[in-house]
Image (cartoon, rainbow, N blue to C red; front, side, top):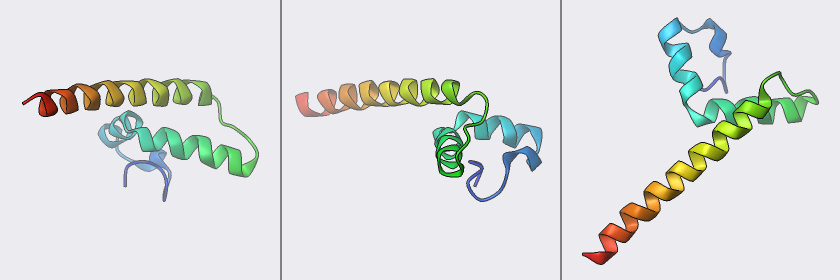
Length: 72
């Protein structure tokens, strides 16, 4: 709902706009929309970096939680 997939996030209140930019789906929507339409918006590189960092953090977190669960 806050990712900008169905409606622009610019119309959201400030708190919801900030929340939207923290969600990974917002960045994915922006990159995919740009690729489909044939133009990439400014700052797409930072969205890609954000997605890579979020994926690495999620992977490390999942791996450590799984190891802790399997060691029990």
